[in-house]
Image (cartoon, rainbow, N blue to C red; front, top):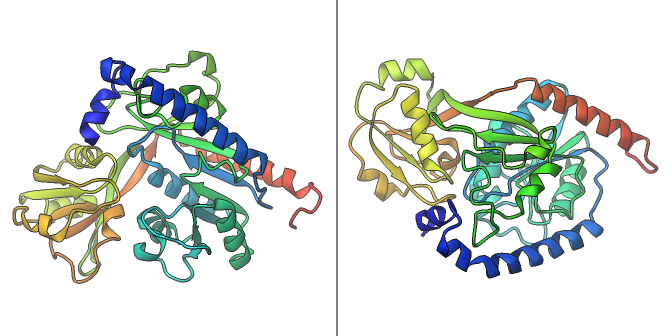
Length: 353
């Protein structure tokens, strides 16, 4: 079903056109909901940075969020991360990483972000509740990163990063006639547009040249950095691992939004894959499915790794990728923009000092 929808969303063909009345209705309802939320938006006492997308289907927000968080930590900030907590039922109170950092407690992406950055995390569909709980538990936090919070306008934000991939805005239509949660013009309101590209991908065409000065556009490509043996925690850099294990037949498995992007990254880095196994986003390939793969190492994503409890298949190696940005200076610009936001907040009545 997902593959069929993606095929429909690549053009403005007859099926997409037939769905336009539903897209119109979706757009009206979504726009009204966002306006209603923004009227009562809660203002945090620290700068809020939102990382999100308008395109469904896994654009790569998590590596961007992790890269931003690590950069801010290195620059002297104390970031906290807010997440919806996809796949868990939070109840009335937000779930904090202080209580547990595993995926059953936080959800897979928050657990991955906590493991990758060490930053405190709160998960709840209402990001304002999550923010209050996180700031109360960690008064040292001086910037909040709302992961996947673009359409949650009940939390006031200072800066926005929108993440897309080579699909760009697809056929430019809203769900279900197209792949968009918001109209393409929404990109103009963002501060940065990060486009994650797989090996061989070309950047999507600029469908809105009038907004060439905003948002700032940056391309992102991931490359394997190091691998961790899931069973015993052994860590090897990519070249060492490839020398020791990469000459034998290997397989790769992924339960992410765009698994082919993961497989293409491995092959571009010099690995020959005997088999690949895909599962829907947020659903790691099952142990039974993994047993059907040939003998030899199985490479999986860090997002999937948090879902496999011990004891696990001894063939599993977790690939940790590092981001390569077309403009590394964009993170320095982000740091400067956040300092400006923090200075403004300090001069507001009732500001936290």
